[in-house]
Length: 215
Image (cartoon, rainbow, N blue to C red; front, side, top):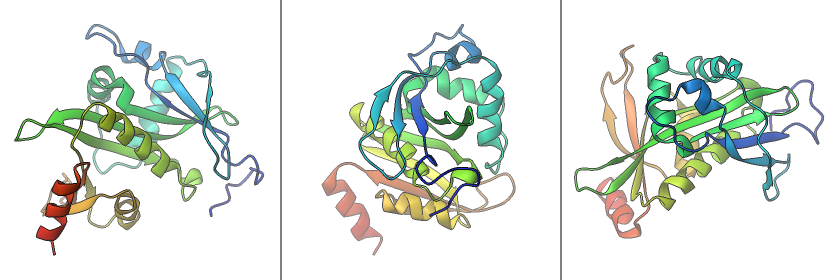
Protein backbone atom coordinates (compact mmCIF):
# COMPACT_ATOMS: atom_id res chain seq x y z
CA UNK A 1 0.00 0.00 0.00
CA UNK A 2 1.21 3.47 -0.85
CA UNK A 3 1.97 5.54 2.24
CA UNK A 4 1.36 9.19 1.43
CA UNK A 5 4.08 11.52 2.72
CA UNK A 6 2.95 13.69 5.61
CA UNK A 7 0.07 11.46 6.70
CA UNK A 8 -0.16 9.10 9.66
CA UNK A 9 -1.34 5.55 9.03
CA UNK A 10 -4.67 6.27 10.72
CA UNK A 11 -5.38 9.53 8.92
CA UNK A 12 -4.08 8.80 5.43
CA UNK A 13 -7.53 8.66 3.85
CA UNK A 14 -9.84 11.01 5.68
CA UNK A 15 -11.62 11.81 2.44
CA UNK A 16 -15.05 12.75 1.25
CA UNK A 17 -16.61 11.06 -1.75
CA UNK A 18 -19.39 13.24 -3.08
CA UNK A 19 -21.49 13.73 -6.16
CA UNK A 20 -22.26 16.97 -7.91
CA UNK A 21 -25.63 18.19 -6.58
CA UNK A 22 -29.06 18.32 -8.17
CA UNK A 23 -29.23 18.88 -11.93
CA UNK A 24 -29.00 22.48 -13.10
CA UNK A 25 -30.80 24.00 -16.09
CA UNK A 26 -28.94 25.01 -19.23
CA UNK A 27 -28.65 28.61 -18.03
CA UNK A 28 -26.75 27.68 -14.89
CA UNK A 29 -23.02 28.13 -14.78
CA UNK A 30 -20.51 25.43 -13.94
CA UNK A 31 -19.57 27.52 -10.91
CA UNK A 32 -23.03 27.28 -9.37
CA UNK A 33 -23.17 23.57 -10.15
CA UNK A 34 -20.00 22.91 -8.21
CA UNK A 35 -21.51 24.85 -5.32
CA UNK A 36 -24.28 22.26 -5.03
CA UNK A 37 -22.11 19.27 -4.17
CA UNK A 38 -24.20 16.89 -2.08
CA UNK A 39 -24.51 13.37 -0.72
CA UNK A 40 -20.92 12.94 0.33
CA UNK A 41 -19.49 9.96 2.17
CA UNK A 42 -16.63 9.97 4.62
CA UNK A 43 -14.16 7.15 4.08
CA UNK A 44 -11.95 6.03 6.94
CA UNK A 45 -8.55 4.51 6.26
CA UNK A 46 -8.62 0.73 6.53
CA UNK A 47 -12.14 0.17 5.26
CA UNK A 48 -15.38 0.11 7.17
CA UNK A 49 -18.82 1.30 6.22
CA UNK A 50 -18.96 4.81 4.78
CA UNK A 51 -20.90 7.19 7.01
CA UNK A 52 -23.03 10.11 5.77
CA UNK A 53 -21.54 13.53 6.43
CA UNK A 54 -22.32 17.12 5.42
CA UNK A 55 -20.83 18.52 2.24
CA UNK A 56 -17.92 20.88 2.66
CA UNK A 57 -18.58 24.46 1.61
CA UNK A 58 -17.73 24.96 -2.05
CA UNK A 59 -16.89 28.04 -4.09
CA UNK A 60 -15.91 28.86 -7.65
CA UNK A 61 -12.17 28.66 -6.94
CA UNK A 62 -12.46 24.85 -6.88
CA UNK A 63 -13.59 24.60 -10.49
CA UNK A 64 -9.99 25.06 -11.60
CA UNK A 65 -8.85 22.45 -9.08
CA UNK A 66 -11.22 19.87 -10.54
CA UNK A 67 -10.16 20.62 -14.10
CA UNK A 68 -6.46 20.46 -13.22
CA UNK A 69 -6.93 17.15 -11.41
CA UNK A 70 -8.53 15.53 -14.43
CA UNK A 71 -6.56 17.27 -17.18
CA UNK A 72 -3.10 16.27 -16.01
CA UNK A 73 -3.94 12.57 -16.33
CA UNK A 74 -5.80 12.63 -19.64
CA UNK A 75 -4.41 11.91 -23.11
CA UNK A 76 -6.47 14.72 -24.58
CA UNK A 77 -7.38 18.08 -23.04
CA UNK A 78 -11.03 18.97 -22.53
CA UNK A 79 -12.55 22.44 -22.64
CA UNK A 80 -14.74 23.79 -19.87
CA UNK A 81 -17.71 23.12 -22.15
CA UNK A 82 -17.03 19.40 -21.96
CA UNK A 83 -17.08 19.49 -18.17
CA UNK A 84 -20.25 21.58 -18.25
CA UNK A 85 -21.89 19.05 -20.59
CA UNK A 86 -21.38 16.17 -18.17
CA UNK A 87 -21.93 18.03 -14.91
CA UNK A 88 -25.09 19.86 -15.95
CA UNK A 89 -26.75 16.85 -17.55
CA UNK A 90 -25.65 14.07 -15.17
CA UNK A 91 -24.60 15.72 -11.90
CA UNK A 92 -25.27 12.56 -9.89
CA UNK A 93 -22.76 10.67 -12.07
CA UNK A 94 -19.91 13.11 -11.46
CA UNK A 95 -18.34 11.76 -8.28
CA UNK A 96 -15.48 13.50 -6.49
CA UNK A 97 -13.06 12.61 -3.70
CA UNK A 98 -12.14 15.49 -1.39
CA UNK A 99 -9.42 15.45 1.27
CA UNK A 100 -10.55 17.45 4.30
CA UNK A 101 -7.01 17.51 5.71
CA UNK A 102 -5.54 19.32 2.71
CA UNK A 103 -8.75 21.03 1.56
CA UNK A 104 -8.32 19.73 -1.98
CA UNK A 105 -9.86 17.40 -4.53
CA UNK A 106 -7.87 14.20 -4.94
CA UNK A 107 -10.02 12.11 -7.26
CA UNK A 108 -12.86 12.34 -9.75
CA UNK A 109 -14.93 10.12 -12.01
CA UNK A 110 -17.22 11.64 -14.64
CA UNK A 111 -19.94 9.63 -16.39
CA UNK A 112 -23.10 10.00 -18.45
CA UNK A 113 -26.16 8.04 -19.57
CA UNK A 114 -26.99 7.12 -23.16
CA UNK A 115 -28.83 4.43 -25.14
CA UNK A 116 -27.29 1.59 -27.12
CA UNK A 117 -28.32 0.42 -30.59
CA UNK A 118 -31.12 -1.71 -29.10
CA UNK A 119 -32.53 1.24 -27.18
CA UNK A 120 -31.42 0.05 -23.74
CA UNK A 121 -29.89 2.48 -21.27
CA UNK A 122 -26.10 2.53 -21.35
CA UNK A 123 -23.68 4.18 -18.98
CA UNK A 124 -20.49 5.77 -20.24
CA UNK A 125 -17.47 6.38 -18.02
CA UNK A 126 -15.72 9.34 -19.59
CA UNK A 127 -13.01 10.35 -17.12
CA UNK A 128 -11.27 8.94 -14.05
CA UNK A 129 -8.37 10.65 -12.31
CA UNK A 130 -6.68 10.16 -8.93
CA UNK A 131 -3.99 12.44 -7.53
CA UNK A 132 -0.68 10.56 -7.70
CA UNK A 133 -0.17 10.81 -3.91
CA UNK A 134 -3.46 8.98 -3.31
CA UNK A 135 -3.04 6.09 -5.71
CA UNK A 136 -2.85 2.42 -4.71
CA UNK A 137 -5.27 3.10 -1.85
CA UNK A 138 -8.38 1.79 -3.59
CA UNK A 139 -9.82 5.26 -4.09
CA UNK A 140 -10.29 4.85 -7.85
CA UNK A 141 -12.17 1.60 -7.29
CA UNK A 142 -14.47 3.27 -4.76
CA UNK A 143 -15.23 6.17 -7.05
CA UNK A 144 -16.02 3.92 -10.01
CA UNK A 145 -18.16 1.62 -7.88
CA UNK A 146 -20.16 4.58 -6.62
CA UNK A 147 -20.77 5.79 -10.18
CA UNK A 148 -21.67 2.27 -11.37
CA UNK A 149 -24.20 1.87 -8.55
CA UNK A 150 -25.90 5.09 -9.60
CA UNK A 151 -25.95 4.14 -13.27
CA UNK A 152 -27.38 0.73 -12.46
CA UNK A 153 -30.02 2.31 -10.22
CA UNK A 154 -31.15 4.35 -13.23
CA UNK A 155 -31.76 1.23 -15.31
CA UNK A 156 -28.50 0.80 -17.21
CA UNK A 157 -27.83 -2.62 -18.73
CA UNK A 158 -24.16 -1.90 -19.35
CA UNK A 159 -21.32 0.55 -18.78
CA UNK A 160 -18.77 1.37 -21.49
CA UNK A 161 -15.39 3.09 -21.42
CA UNK A 162 -12.15 3.41 -23.35
CA UNK A 163 -8.64 3.24 -21.95
CA UNK A 164 -5.18 3.37 -23.51
CA UNK A 165 -3.71 -0.02 -24.39
CA UNK A 166 -0.59 0.91 -22.41
CA UNK A 167 -2.51 1.82 -19.24
CA UNK A 168 -2.13 -1.52 -17.50
CA UNK A 169 -3.12 -0.20 -14.08
CA UNK A 170 -6.43 1.14 -15.35
CA UNK A 171 -7.15 -2.10 -17.19
CA UNK A 172 -6.49 -4.06 -14.00
CA UNK A 173 -8.80 -1.80 -11.99
CA UNK A 174 -11.64 -2.19 -14.47
CA UNK A 175 -11.08 -5.93 -14.84
CA UNK A 176 -11.38 -6.35 -11.08
CA UNK A 177 -14.72 -4.54 -11.27
CA UNK A 178 -16.01 -6.96 -13.91
CA UNK A 179 -15.29 -5.09 -17.15
CA UNK A 180 -14.35 -7.20 -20.16
CA UNK A 181 -12.45 -6.19 -23.27
CA UNK A 182 -14.71 -5.73 -26.29
CA UNK A 183 -12.37 -4.47 -29.00
CA UNK A 184 -9.17 -2.63 -29.80
CA UNK A 185 -9.63 0.83 -31.32
CA UNK A 186 -6.69 1.68 -33.58
CA UNK A 187 -5.34 5.24 -33.22
CA UNK A 188 -8.36 6.14 -31.11
CA UNK A 189 -6.74 9.12 -29.39
CA UNK A 190 -5.53 12.30 -31.06
CA UNK A 191 -1.96 11.41 -30.14
CA UNK A 192 -2.24 8.25 -32.24
CA UNK A 193 -2.39 5.81 -29.31
CA UNK A 194 -4.68 2.77 -29.53
CA UNK A 195 -7.43 2.16 -26.99
CA UNK A 196 -9.34 -0.81 -25.63
CA UNK A 197 -13.10 -0.52 -25.35
CA UNK A 198 -14.22 -2.15 -22.13
CA UNK A 199 -17.75 -3.10 -21.11
CA UNK A 200 -19.47 -4.09 -17.91
CA UNK A 201 -22.75 -5.99 -18.37
CA UNK A 202 -25.35 -6.08 -15.61
CA UNK A 203 -27.46 -8.78 -17.31
CA UNK A 204 -25.90 -12.22 -16.50
CA UNK A 205 -27.03 -13.95 -19.75
CA UNK A 206 -25.67 -11.10 -21.87
CA UNK A 207 -22.42 -11.03 -19.93
CA UNK A 208 -21.97 -14.80 -20.30
CA UNK A 209 -22.62 -14.64 -24.03
CA UNK A 210 -20.12 -11.83 -24.45
CA UNK A 211 -17.42 -13.68 -22.53
CA UNK A 212 -17.90 -16.88 -24.51
CA UNK A 213 -17.62 -14.98 -27.79
CA UNK A 214 -14.20 -13.69 -26.77
CA UNK A 215 -12.73 -17.10 -25.92
